[in-house]
Image 1: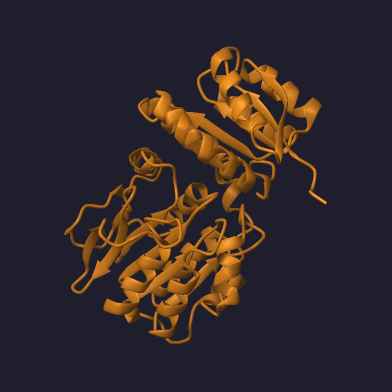
Image 2 (image 1 turned 180 degrees about the horizontal axis):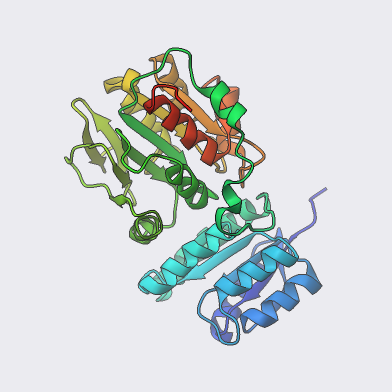
Length: 354
């Protein structure tokens, strides 16, 4: 017997957008629209009253915008929220990533033409299903997100023989932007390593993600360019539609020739496997929250080649799929919260000192 449909609440000030989203959801047998709201305040009230499984949230709205509405919903009735916003409006994109930091699960592009809505017809149901599996909790403010880091856990995870970590390869998907932010925040101000990131995200949001991280953390975060050196202190994120790979001598490659791995290009497997091939003993591989299994095989290959590997733990993962697959593949034995993973790397670079 089929399970209960996924109840969806739509919050958008445009009646036209709500109508199209309603049609897309209604056309999918395993989900249904249980309510609509025309502004953020109405959205908060509807979320409390209707208890939807997933909320589709616009950013720019009257009375209460999507960011403030997300904050209130996560405080009153934590619910998986998919933020839908324009890729062209940098201000809205920044606000969307702040909403993810406050507890939203994912960001999706608001279509601007018929072709965009056709793509949304495929992407939206998959995103709703992933969000329905997400673990959400009341948002924390300020430094509260760093409280509870366990010094004992961090100390235990530091290997007895310290590796020479010159490259940090990171894979992430659903819930990844916030986890990546916490991982980077725990690193030293001038880490002696380059950080290469594959983050599954809707095409066109890569620049917005880098701008948000750079502004929030004060770090050198950019979309990767082909042929640039993976230099210490740089954080480089894979562009849309291309694999991110590391080659001999620490040269970054943006590869559009290799086919997708499963449905993913960029793929975390490709990044980890490239590190395993060129410089495994200088690489730390980190696999964060995400649906599916991308990165598990590559992280296992990196570990077998002598790399240092870790994953995000289940309790802090929005979706534990990718880290779980990596643990099942014996790709890592260390599973901690993102901030603790960053502190493990910081301990390694400090020679194991507290």
